[in-house]
Picture 1 (cartoon, rainbow, N blue to C red):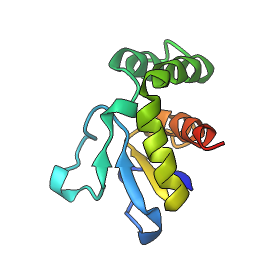
Picture 2 (picture 1 turned 30 degrees about the vertical axis):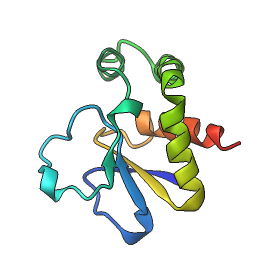
Picture 3 (picture 1 turned 135 degrees about the vertical axis):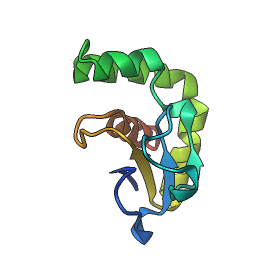
Length: 116
């Protein structure tokens, strides 16, 4: 199972394996204070794509398409997390304010597609 959660939310035992999927460290969070099992920068969107999306230069549909194209160069890393998600819950943690439209949700969908 793959789920998404803001980095600022309280960790819970049901989160399972927690993976930070942002390229930048979240603002206001001390490294020793964040409960996460790994920081996977490889699966985060490129800086240019992230800036375009957060600056509203592109919409979610365009962002998702371009982000998925970027993820194609990280299939091995994606398969590793997808395989882990078959064994236990994997929670993708992110810093974005929008909990419905963000890269972690796109990534979760992409990871789930790797298990089919």
